[in-house]
Amino acid sequence: MEVLMGRHPSDRISYFSSLESTSSSTLNDQQVLLKDTIDQRLSPPVGQSAEDLVSTMRIALACLNGNPQLRPTMQQVSQPLGRQSHPLLSPFRTIKLEELLGDVVCNG
Image 1 (spheres, one colour):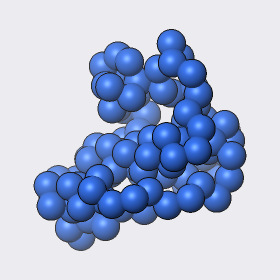
Image 2 (cartoon, rainbow, N blue to C red; image 1 turned 90 degrees about the vertical axis):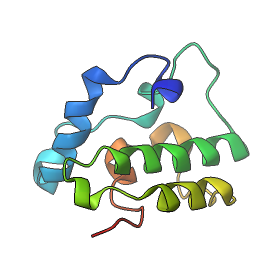
Image 3 (cartoon, one colour; image 1 turned 180 degrees about the horizontal axis):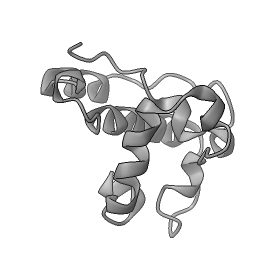
Image 4 (tube, rainbow, N blue to C red; image 1 turned 135 degrees about the vertical axis):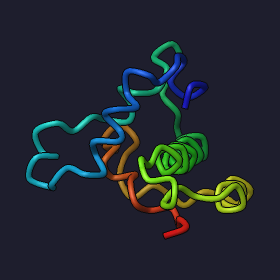
């Protein structure tokens, strides 16, 4: 996450953790766009780069789960990184961090 954000994610770790336990009605009030989270010094990713970034951020968020039993294993992390990313279902600039949670296979 530090590489994607261009800084240590310390200010965001508690936010990411709170997403797991927040109800969907509350989420509407605090949605954060992925594009606003990544390093602003870089050009916005397009095409395959955007797909790869979304896939990588999805994995990174799964690794932040507050419950160690629900975090992915290294094998579960390495497999998706070695595969081709899936096409984005919506434009990169509209993807919310909340949409990336819960899509990675975990130990649970």
